[in-house]
Structures are given as C-alpha cells and as structure tokens.
Length: 484
Image 1 (cartoon, helix red, strand yellow):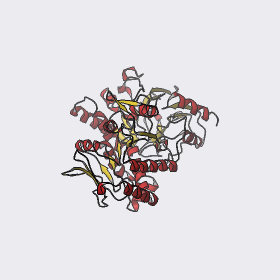
Image 2 (cartoon, one colour):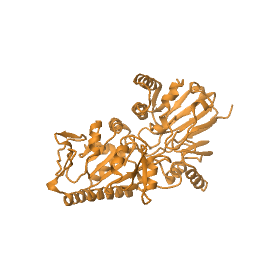
Image 3 (cartoon, one colour):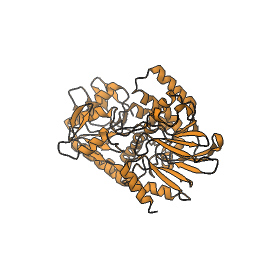
Image 4 (cartoon, one colour):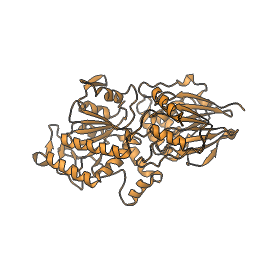
C-alpha cells in the first residue's frame, strides 16, 4: 500500500493559519483550514496539491478562526465533503464563522447560503469513541483541553499505521475545561509547539497577579483593558474574576481601597453626560448597561469594580458556553449545582449596542473592559486602546499569545521603551499605560505540559513532527523532547 503523505498547507512554522492535508488510502483528509494572522503566511488554495473539490473530509480540531477561518472559501471553491468535529465545536462553528464573514465584502445572501451549507455538511462526534471513514480509515477524537470542544485526532489507516494530530493542547486546571485526555501511542505525532520554548506561571501565581493589577486600578482610578479572544479566553476571565471577587480577603481589600478613593460623596460625572455611581447597589441589574437621562450608569455591588464585556461575539459565545454545561469540568459543574453560575456574577455588564460601546469609551475608571480581538488586530478593543493607552493610570493586560506583526505584539514590545508608541488605524498612539503579560492565562500548554502529554502516552511515538510554532519555540521543544 502507498505510504501516507502529509502536506502542511499552513501553520507548519507559524502559530496561525493551521491547515494540514493527509493523503492516504486514496482519500484526501484535511485537518483544519484556518486564517493566518499578523505576518504569518499560508499557501493559496490554487497552489494546493489537490483541488478543494477533491477533499473528501475536513476535520476541525476546534472553533478558533486560525483553525476554521478559511472554511467558507474552501466551500466557495468546491468542497462538498463532510466536516467532522466534536459536538461542542459544532455548536460554536456557525457563530464564529458568521462573525468572521462580517469582515468580508460578501453579500448577506451569500453569507447566509455559505453558513447553511456549512451547517448541513458538519457533524458532531463524541470523544473517545472510534468511528470509520471510507476505505478502511478509522478515527477517534480526544479532549484537548484548549477551549470547549477542542480535540486531538487519532487516525488509524487500513494497514494499522497510526497518526495523531494534537490540534491545540490546553493547560491542566483551566477553568471550565476538562484536562486534556491521554493519547494512545502512534507511529507519527503531529504536535503543536506554540509555547515550546517557555513555561507559564502557575494557576495561583496568575490569580495573585490579577489581584494586584485590579488593586492598583482602584488606587489609580484607572481602567484595566484586557484584549481577549471571544471564544475561550473571555469565558475563562469571567470565571476567574467571579472567583476572585468571591474571595473574602479580596473583598475586604477592594472595599478598603474603594472607601479611600471615594470623592464627591460617591458620585462622579463627566462632561459627556456619562454617570458612574460610586455608592454601589447590590441589586444592580445584572450583565446589562443601564441607561438613564444622565447617560451610562454602572451599578455595582459593594467592593467590586464593574466588568464590561464589550464584545457582541464574546457575549454570544458565553451564552453557548452556558448551554454546553455537560462538557464543563467537575469544578464548574459543582458551582452550578450550588446555584453559583461560574460565568456570571453581580457587576458583570454586557455591552451589546454600539452606542453603549461609544459611551463606555468616555467613561472614567475604575473599571475592567474585556474586548476583542485578542491580538488587537481589530474589533472594539482598538477604540479602547486609542482612548486609554495615553493615560498612565490605565493598565493593558495581555492574557494570550501575540503573533508577530500584530498590534498586540507591538504594544508588548514598545511599551518597554521610552517614548514607545503603537500605530492603530494608521495613527500613532503613545503608550503611557502600564502593560502586563500574564502567560498563566494562555490557552496553550507550555513546554512542560507538552512534554508531559507526550510522556503520558503508553508508548513513545515512532516520530514527532512539530507544527504551530515559531522557529525558536520548535527548536527548543525538539531539544527537550530529544532528552527523553
């Protein structure tokens, strides 16, 4: 039988644009079809070794755009095979792609037709069960622990040769998510390497850093801006802040700081008509920005600063996460059973309408604003950064990977230099706000986690091919894997 062939069409030596073609048993099986971001590059479809119309199956490891973003183009170019993913990814697929296609010049009718076709072609499958494709190929999905629905895929060819595509692997003890499953042994492992050159802060360390940043925000009366992906990171942050605000010691600290900073009998008003109430109301309307004749009002419970989710897609994904509780980890399920919703709390506000987003831009601190995109390549976070980067009272809090060529990477880099600035929409903005990078919130496993995942396999892989990482990260991980 002809030896299987794997062609990396995107994401081989970069962190975005994942797309891999497995040719075996006369079938063309694609794993992911994602968009590249920043300076990352992908192979144009007309240069692929096969036509999109000749692809028999498309497997999706999860619903992030750098893994699914080119699916509409694939279908436009003739793909009509089956799209295979986990049940949770199936639930997230259409909202994510609908949002992404909103940035194209395609007509509403064309977008609707594409979404309908994607929905008809896609199928959700269970974890840890073996299923059969045509021509004797079998597959099994395992939980990858990266975001809800993420999976790694194990293929077994008709001659017994086995291949595992790791997809994006998550870290252990991530809020809401189950830990990654242990993979079975394989002849070939296609392994991600995003953080192959470094280790993250621990869970406790990251909570302490978050606590300190929020404490300083109260001291400075500033705003904490958190660029975050709508899918995964936003829900994780909501969960973490809920736990943090529920901590008795933190409550006392926040209350003390707030009393110290109260001015004008607890009421602050700006000339734009936006009002921030300083004496908090425990019975505030939850997850909603309330309007009054004075403008925007944030009503908050005692000791808390308001948390604004300024991301329509993030809000929609959070609702979907809530509906997929059967896939949560045991801790999140236990909280829900006690009546404590793990991704909702007093002081959490949804910014759905654009006019409320504009009002939020004029609002004084203290406040926390979570908005997309996670790499600052677009979305509402751009307007927030334009408004707030020049104020030294503010903080920018990066909780995810920032690809080369993105505004997020530039802010991290140039915030460390005197007179540093970033270019947003063609205009320079000085970086006076304090900039933080908290790697403990990464949705990817670090070097230690990747090595432990490989070591947990019952048998060592026959060969390992690293993808989804920059050159230095792959080199470092290859070196460490070689020591085992």
